[in-house]
Length: 201
Image (tube, rainbow, N blue to C red):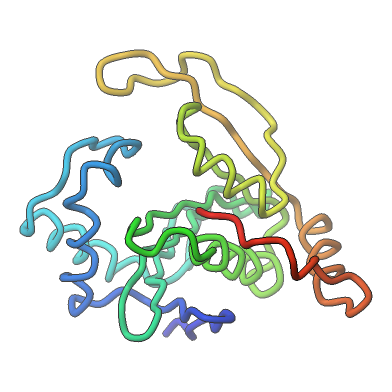
């Protein structure tokens, strides 16, 4: 049984079928589906199938497993984050996330992904985590950059997207970088300027 991760405002916990309404609220939105491989807004029944799949993605037990967690705020699911265990030998995983734009501009997606990265590096023992996004998905690229992930590659025309060849960006972070950054953020002498507004997701 996965122990929920407590972030500053969010709780990351396994998805349940009770989350259907909240998940369907954003899976039916064209602006959310724009960068997803399926591309099309989902019907309620399709969201039900999606949620049922996510309920089974509740832990990393073997290479290839997916851990999908609901990011809950005040009883509502704002989105989901996931880790895909890509390599046991290399201690590598891929991160992913989908959030409801209704909650944008509050830093919630950044907080949720950061919490999952922290768990992956500090609890699960990962060495490297990477994330991928369409080269045109500026919001996703900004989120990974905010988390200290470096853009390592631009794979030119590497996959078919809506019937056309598309570029994909690859971002990554290794454990020593995460731990160093995490330590700096918890150092009272190194605090962000309170005058700076929180960036939008």
